Image (cartoon, rainbow, N blue to C red; front, side, top):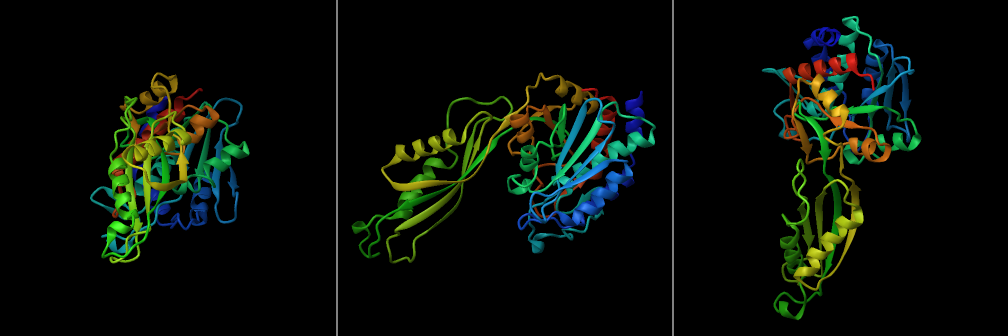
Length: 380
């Protein structure tokens, strides 16, 4: 019953206070700057007796690493990002960096994405300590920079440095306390459509890049890419998010630019995703255009039958298994290092990145209890 003793030692006020403190440190990315939250994280890790390292691939973009345990046995990694997306303060009814609790909800930028999850992961280990439970594995914490803009200066840099070694991992992104084992990837691209300028009084003399772009938008937005339907992730999607073109109403547009968000399934490559976009465009007309890839992040998944999934679900009260339409840093762990990784945390992706972002205090507590049970029992 050591796992339940550890879970019972989770302290509601303590986990809420830590999450609120982390929220109050502004770590918006862009522009990027995680330094303000380093001190409270180091203090929390030091309280747990962790060996601590600050990893800073470029000045001002630190990740905080901590290890608790002898290092002789297996290692369980908790990977959580400490940057948050920007805010438009006028849209908020509460201070975005206030860390206020109202009616059982903790509000603030990063409340669910994902400073609440980080606080729950740390509280799980504090609960083990208070219950006198010594985890059989080393518990590693990687609190990383730069996830919100792709992870190049955070988890990807850590993976490239050789500092990431673990037998299993948890990424406490908001999952509504479900166990995420699969996630879609994304291709962000800009499509430049070229036409031929002419006087607006005689548009047939020219060729409108705006009109051609409109046909391309119709071909791509909500397109059916066919093929495999993933049992947890469904079908790939495409969203045309922005469009800009032309110079004046009385000039036939010579150029128009589109930006698209193309979500891909695990296993699909950058080249394959781009080729599908090209095929859809070419199928509806002969256009003068080119495509520039702005970013690509691969999808990833962990076999639902993997033993770590069953072990984690046991710690989480047999929580359901789910696929995530968004992407997380779990992809680096799964795809590049072969580390079995699940995504599990308090809060919902539906309120992440929104005004008045919040996390239910009850979910902070439930997540911390799951972490306490997992730490008490994980043996690799």
